Length: 329
Image 1 (cartoon, rainbow, N blue to C red):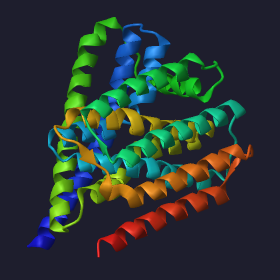
Image 2 (spheres, rainbow, N blue to C red; image 1 turned 180 degrees about the horizontal axis):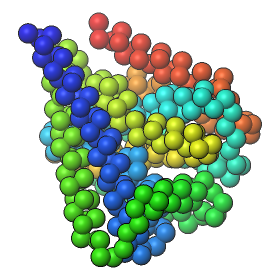
Image 3 (tube, one colour; image 1 turned 180 degrees about the vertical axis):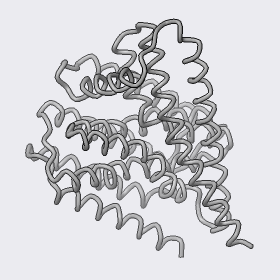
């Protein structure tokens, strides 16, 4: 009977994660169309793309798990997704592309981001928890960081290229005008509703699986949930790679790690009625910081990112999965 339940909960978790991917993509598409119809600034559109495009699944899981008093699922998802974005998504891109050149300005920006994220997550691990006060500060500083990132952008940076490519693709699918705002708004609201439903399904299935296998919620969040919520980044990166937009295949994925560490954790802390402790995530944290250090070294080398670097990163990620599997026994 427990095997049957495990299968059902696993199917529910997979359905929730795929639903998060699809609904999250729909949220971003309709949000950008609405912003275009209202003729808002490019900064606002850029904020939507960079802050939400690949982070809707993590945000949905954070809100639902925080309100459901099982914040450890989201905490594990944040740490695991930060690791899988490098050890899985970036690694696959490098292996497929063989060589990915990056501009000097983008390299420097990504290295600074990795240092900021390492500092923030290092602080969280040192105190061992996230609560409402810390969550408020994290969210506030994320807004400041995003402002300074965009304030110093040049028209030739990869972030502007991403916004241009994304909005152009949407415009090609269907142009919109102000008369369509009501319909687009309805689509946006229903898409957000789908995100929260899929988040609820994901969290509930993860909690049930944890009880069946008598494992920690953090482990489920840092492995299965993290891989699932990294699917949008992987899909976006592979699409960019197919179009030979090599910088767009790497930089936005690394940039989303900043969102995980500050915005998602911040919202998780603010929505949870209790402090969320990270004691069960020390192993995942070690692998994550190693991945950050390796990525920073690869960027610092000032040479095109290469396939052998992708092999190193994905080997590290496989080692992490083996480590977590061993912990279950």
